[in-house]
Image (cartoon, rainbow, N blue to C red; front, top):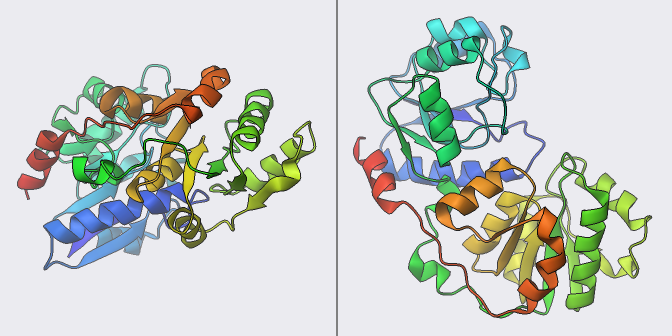
Amino acid sequence: MITVYDTATGSLNIGDTIIMEAAMEELEKIFSKEHLVLYPTHYALAKSTLKKSWDNDLGFVCGTNLLRNYWRWRARKNQWSLGFFDAFKMQPAILFGVGWNVYGDKTEWKAKIFYQKALRKDILHSVRDSYTESKLKDCGVMNIVNTGCPTLWGLTDKKMSNVPKEKADSVVFTLTDYRQDSNQDRALINTLILNYSEVYFWPQGSEDLIYFQDLLQKDVPNGDRIKLVPSNLRAFNEVLSVNDIDYVGTRLHAGVRALQLTKRSIIIGVDNRAIEMKEDVNLPVVNRASIAELSELINGSWKPSLNIPWNEIEKWKAQF
């Protein structure tokens, strides 16, 4: 059996489901004959359950922004729900496309010790971006390869050649409840209403819909034209699949899912994750501070050309 630390179960962000789908697809290819057992990271597990997860020789921590500058003594205080002292008891794990939480201050000593003890020393770890790589190396974890997020591994040149160069008739957009900027986000919505015949909104996070409804009450002319997509991944996949549609929005992995379904995608960068992935792989990301340029970009003719680190990906896979 192989332990998989599941970052989607219990998450309030459907983007984590998009990441876990991609991660599991890759792990099932690599370990086609093994039994992959999932243990959620979002909730502290009973000691007996932890011991079972630590019995297996291999354990993978999948995707998302799990790492950060500090580590709490108690498991439920951490994004990966392990306490500080669990690092000394557990079977060390392997990172798979994991990223750093936010741009932050110097990493504290407890976090450094936790990563040194909780992560394998004899196997390369896969991280999502170069910022995460540098932060882990600062913690003394040197066996790292920057593979990008596993959601990008299927975006081959052939796949990307099917993404349209010109804008579609319709657009689906997202907002981010925990990265609010009402002025810039209203400008985003108004720009989309002006440039597309049909506009859809998809709430990816738990309070995105509340934020969206609040914005509609604050100077969004013709906001009643916007159609609401149910807050589940199946509905989002369907609206992307059956329409001549673009994606524009602040949710990173909604934009990646649009690319996976060969739809034109413009991701509005609101945090380090999108910005780092633009720097590393040329993901089509526009900084929210440049929202005034969005209309020109929407109406221009362009196609993203990604720099996926295929050599690093193969190097990480080959060790298994």
